[in-house]
Length: 284
Image (cartoon, rainbow, N blue to C red):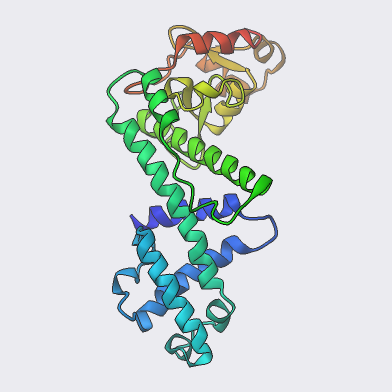
């Protein structure tokens, strides 16, 4: 679990990092160093030595108090005497990283709650979407101390990130983490594509039947309405693809796949009315 959770945090901190600030790499390094520091002297925090296994907000906050105590000791801290870089403790990098990790855990826990609703749901996609939309988003700790317009911006970005991550996890699950056209199963390459765009209809943003799991090339082609699906879930090409693009690569990636039926998800198949609307928006 720890590697995947570290990867999730790495993605989070890179996504929320201010470009050029260097916080992303320093936070990840600080948390890795904290594990090393606890190996030197745990002060009763043996359960936190592998920091990427710690998902309790209370335990992280306890650890922040320990960091503050050791920081006040200055160079007398046992951690520093063992050769740990002084800046990460004394300049507050470890403390700042833990504060950021608390924000991440708040979002990750909420995302897990939403995903659990999806996994346990037995009804229609529309009913599922209603449950996800009405689930309280527990983001009070994330926006603590923020006021006015800045706070509203943070709330909006947190909700957007939660919804996008939840949609992505749902699509990865129902399509068994494979591109529905090629079968490619590299998650770093695949995308959770909306049939009705994210900006097109708020009510359909979390609807798994409004999604296709596609590798990046086909995701881009679908987004630009160069490809679509018919009512039998067969790949169709826009006329301008066939008329204007004649390279061998286009032939291999697109022309040869025209008429191919996609691999359908184990539940929440793409809504045919959404696909019809997608086709009407292009040259099919």
